[in-house]
Length: 90
Image (tube, rainbow, N blue to C red; front, side, top):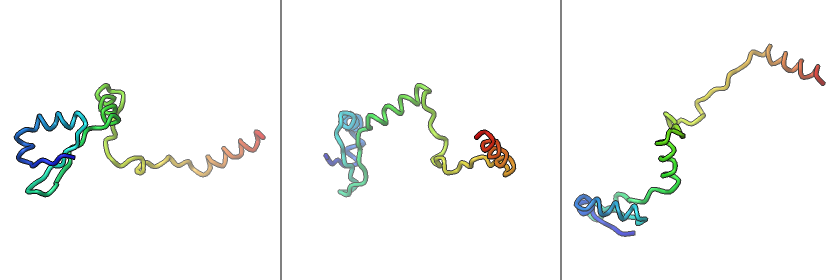
């Protein structure tokens, strides 16, 4: 992995982004200390972006996942009726 300073990156951003797009990884330093890495986008991420742009995939509005969802609850009486019907069908 090649290391470049922030000033160098700023002055030649297009060149370095082309290198990253070609598969190279770069470590970015600020006063000699590594502060970031530039890495190419994976093929999977590119595919996801293409699906979103085509309107095939709709990304989630929040990062909460499905943990915030609550299943509908049925009244106990309704469950009893369903069980009775299942038992009668046997």
